[in-house]
Structures are given as C-alpha cells and as structure tokens.
Image 1: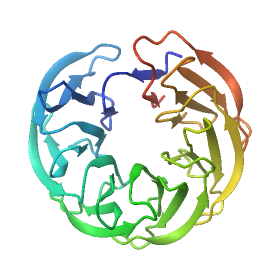
Image 2: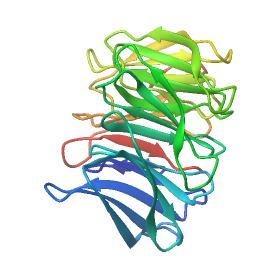
Image 3: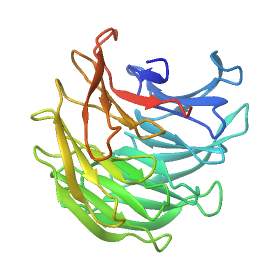
Image 4: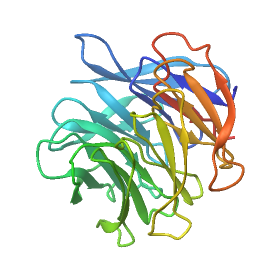
Length: 294
C-alpha cells in the first residue's frame, strides 16, 4: 500500500508535474479555507512552504501540467480560484464566479482549459474555463446537466473527452474535440445515482459510482466518444474519490466507514475483482485516494 497516499480530514490534494510539491486544500472550523503548499523536493519527506487563504471551504485542487498554477474549487463566492505558484509563494492569479458552490476541477492535459463542476442553483452544473493565456480565466463553454450538480469531472488523456458525474444518475461524456467547446457525446445511467466520474490513465474506462447501494460501475470507453457498461462491483461501503493505478491494473477505493479502503483488481481490462482491503485508517474513514505516479 506504500504507493497510495491517504487523504483524510482535508478537501483534496494534488502534486505538481515533477512531484516536488504537493498542494493541499484544507479547512478549519470558522476560519476559512486554505491551500497549503508542502515541499517534497527530497523524496519521502515533507516540509511546510506557505499557505494561501481563501473564503469558504476548498473542495478540490489540481496542478496545471507545467506545475505553475493551482486550480481551486471553493464553497464560497466566487467559487473558483486560480493560484500562481513560483516555487516559493502562492499568489492569486484570477478568480471566476461560478453559478454556485464549486465541487470539482481538473486541468486539461495540455493545461489550456479547466473543467469545473458546481452545485445546482442555475441552469448548468458544468463550466469549461479558458486558460489558453496562462494565469487568466475566461468562460469557454457551459453545459446544462439534467440535474445540475456535478461532484466529479475527469479528462481522457487526449483531452478530446470529459467525463462528468450528473447527480441525477448519469455518467455524461462531453465532446471536446473542438478545443474550447463542449457538446454531448454520450451518457449512461448509473443505478442508484452517480457522484463519480474518473477516467483510467489510458482513457479506455471510466469509474462511476453511487452510495445506495454501494457499488462501482466500470464504463467502457474503448470506442472514443461512446459509453457502455463493462461491469459493476458491489462495495462493502460507500466509495469516495477513487483512482486508477498508472498501469491501469488496480483501482483504489476509499470508504467513509469500515473497511475504509478497498483495492480492486483490473488486470483483465473491463473486469473488476477484489484484491485487498485495509481497515487501519484513523478518523472517520477515507475520503480520497491517489496512486503515486511510479
């Protein structure tokens, strides 16, 4: 399990392009929201560098591919922030006012766009932000989900497609083959609702999942632009933010209750089976899991 980092009692965490730094979105009761930058230039060690204070609670962070910027989705207006990272300081580069609470954010593989999911109140739920001018944000496109509440977004490695979790029970695939625009490509109903959308590293599969009853759906995307159900796997408890291993052979699934963490086998593409579990997490359980790049 040494290749899996646990993230407990924090909103989210992401590493830069070289793995030298880790941005952690964290909150404290009544004291706002923070993005804390940790130094990992000496592999296996951590030290504090700096903190940037936001309003509200940060829900997800993501480094740009070049490591120069950190995208932050947030629970208070303007709901989305872009921070500049110099190697020693974090500073505000730009903000963007989403319709409502920012719930998820991911840079495109080329760093030119940011997919953002937000909580409903208006007409959309999904926003594509333009970052073609580094350090700036502007609206590229929006997409109206059937139930505009998007907990999770994920890019396929080509940047041509975006998987979006529609809380109405759909995994929606958006077409981004024309950069800066999004259109409907396909969708698939997820039994029990859906709050998760995570592409495999090769883009061939997407993980989707509901809380009731707890299970993971593995969606086939081997034909780009189309979705079909590959298989489902019943989980022992509600799964949180998941991750594929870099080689695509395993899936990390944290839980908010015992057994807290399950490792699934995906060595046969399109299938899922039990590999291992771990019950030794402290606190209230697992909220997110991420494989190391190696």
